[in-house]
Length: 104
Image (tube, rainbow, N blue to C red; front, side, top):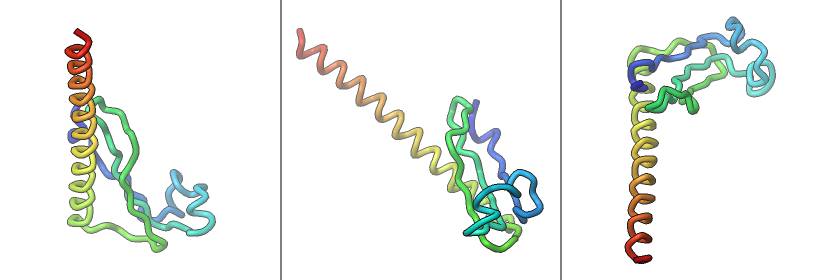
């Protein structure tokens, strides 16, 4: 499953009016978050491994351009993580081959 196909924002324009957030410690006590906007970080296997989020102490709605910018940043984060994982796999394969050659 490709993370791009299931990527969607989790909006909470006013956390005091959103059941998902109303009892969150960051909402009911300092810093008293009133806005949350988050995109899940979904790996290539379809698992959520975290989220990219923005928060504010004032309720708000994000403009479309802001939402698109967050989506772009989210894509870049996942590309970087996938590239690092791929490079790690390559390095492990090279190490294995090198050890196999030197052991012969």
